[in-house]
Length: 94
Image (cartoon, rainbow, N blue to C red; front, side, top):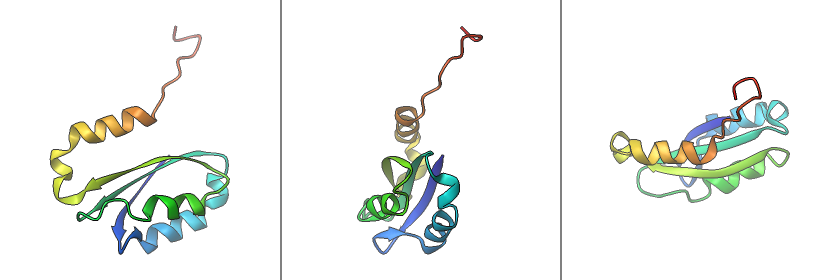
C-alpha cells in the first residue's frame, strides 16, 4: 500500500497521521510505502515519523518529491514505484 502526504513543518500532515493511526491494525503485517511532496525541505522527519507509527508493518524506503517539480518528475515517480512494486507471476500465468 502506498500512503502519500505533504511535508507540513517537517513531518506528515496531521490528517494523514490520524488516518495512519486509525488504520494501524489494518496495516499490521502489510507492506507500506510512504511518498511525500514538499516545497523544498526534503524528507526531514516525515519518513521516520511514519515508520514509528507502524512498528508492526514492513515500511519500505519513503520517497520525497518537490511539489513545484512534480509534473515534470514522471520518470522519477515511475522509478520510485518500479523499485518498490514487485509483480509475482503465478504458475498459471507462466
